[in-house]
Image (cartoon, rainbow, N blue to C red; front, side, top):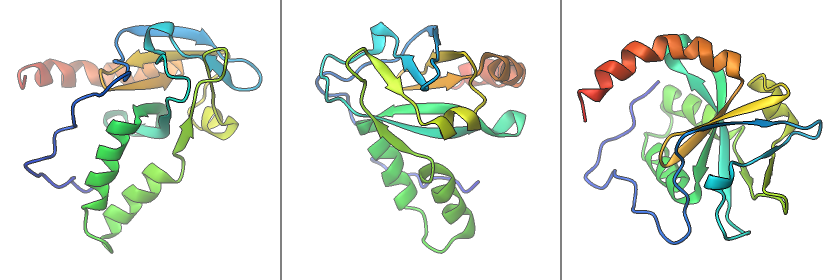
Length: 166
């Protein structure tokens, strides 16, 4: 994949207002209509708060469609800005744009605090009767637990090395 351009202002802007922080891990049931409870700790008080979700790969394991990654609008806009800064006509950049945005959706929580996931998205990442939520600070991921367990095997060495970069 092409590298995202570095810039002096590449840091994600500070959170504003009612933006949740995504920490810890949770397992929730997925119903037959692809609705799943958002962890209560992550729910914004604003009922019009919009999340962006897209299918995300797990590069170390070679999985092209590993999980559903969720972003706040602020973090998603920063991602879009970085991708837009990539050179037009670059084959890798265009492939990245297609991979990121063809499956991206905007979602609000329903009145019961659930995400109503698109059935195709659920199928693409292999979610069954349960969805495993993992907090990533400014983002979150929704996994099939077995897929995550497989991916964690390759994550162990990577995270050990990454801690030294903090």
